[in-house]
Length: 238
Image (cartoon, rainbow, N blue to C red):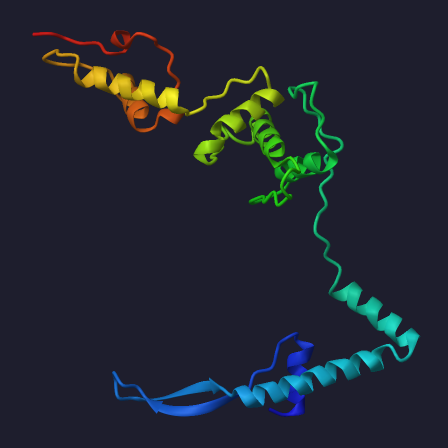
């Protein structure tokens, strides 16, 4: 590898690698083939030269302050002119939020990011920074503004109660469904009564079939509106 190749790689922000051409025979096909194997010793020497070239270029660039300022401005104008968007949530209106809770600026900003941004959002705040509140407010506002049909929050099993409590603290009048042990127990009981009610034939409407399947297999998506099981199972006896 010559000096020109090292300089070209450096200008393109690439680390140099020296690879040796090795001719070989494919053991499966018997055909001749060529592969390039990294030469570790020559690569180390080339990278040392690359580091020297970078240091010398930086020394030359700023040896004259006027030249350094002019080239820095040229680079920034041409290549360094894209800045990630900054989201400001200070102007958000949260009409349904509890009056007893005030979100901190960084929480409002991340809610604004979720509302106005595109694609996925990672709330990479440190522990105790209020990610739970921010996520709940974002989910609620997405629903209220019509950006989503129904938000689904998935959390570890042991945190279901904590998240539901936080949701009700933020939105005391909200109607949410929490798939906890009591709901799963009722779903299992409904399934038992359905299978063991002792009638020769069960005739169910399409709506009841869908509801039953949801209740047995996916109770977290089903609202249990009826307290009497018999009311939901129309039957015909012969």
